[in-house]
Image 1 (cartoon, helix red, strand yellow):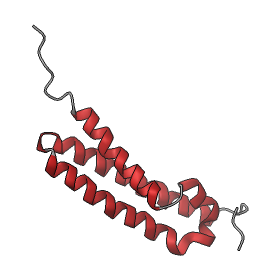
Image 2 (cartoon, helix red, strand yellow):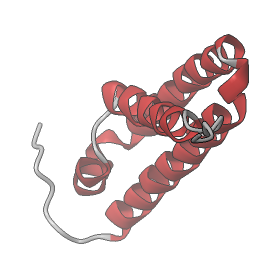
Image 3 (cartoon, rainbow, N blue to C red):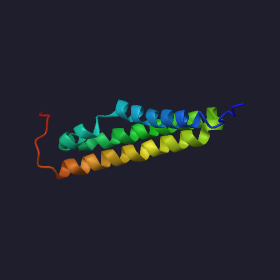
Image 4 (cartoon, rainbow, N blue to C red):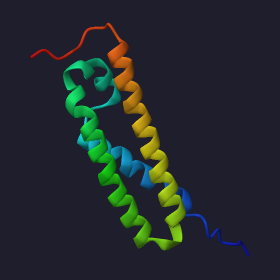
Length: 108
């Protein structure tokens, strides 16, 4: 008789939680590449929208963790991991763009 793996859904829950953070932040703002290229034009609003996306993510991750107590830990670990990575990508893109002498792609 094969034993059932009671943790089989944890990997899926982790990926779904991380994926929702990336989806929400992408929904709220541009990509890190666009950020780097056009930070001089978008600096005043871009990070505001990254942080709004992060707040939305907190709400969805918290709701998922409340609704699925059995998979609460992987939901929280996946979501928090994705939020940290996302914040790091945008902070790095902003700094790289400010330090870059390359051309921007937007003109007003």
